[in-house]
Image (cartoon, rainbow, N blue to C red; front, side, top):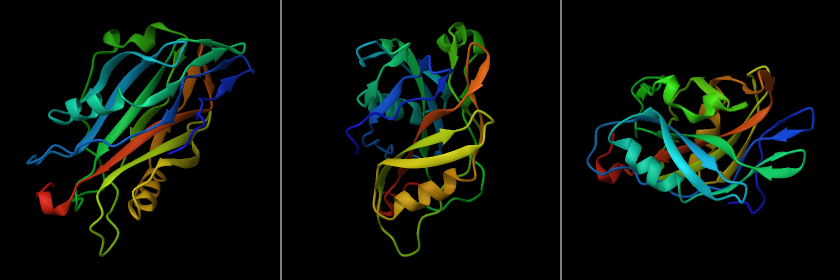
Length: 211
């Protein structure tokens, strides 16, 4: 975990998107054969508090677990000309199978675009275009949550990653997986901008019989 916020990129030195200060554990639902990714939009107030959470990509029964955890994380507000303002963060939570059967993540149901609050504002968060699961390191029985701040350039290319919350050897596995993802860049008033995108990998315990 880190104390300093990881902020979102800026355009012309005027706008910085809301950021994540600290991520926490996400519970992998017990006795479920489902794996996949949930994306939730977190509305962050000028004081850094969570004002609203809205589902962007719904993958039942994983969505409830993701939402209940993400709303407890710590965020920093967006800024406009140096002053804190309300903003949004899209958080992607990957419920990773113990032994991935295929390279791609089968996403859940994307919500209708006219129902997403961020489409009505100036800032559009970076989006995941394609993603893969992480492969468990050999001979490991570790489980837990890895939270990564993914830095996405204005061209949509991955610029770098930073682990905000680790889980032993799983941190490197999650970082390697994200390295092969494809993104669409964030935009502010229609202009592409560099930004950070929070991604969490939830690794199940093999003893629980998760996928």
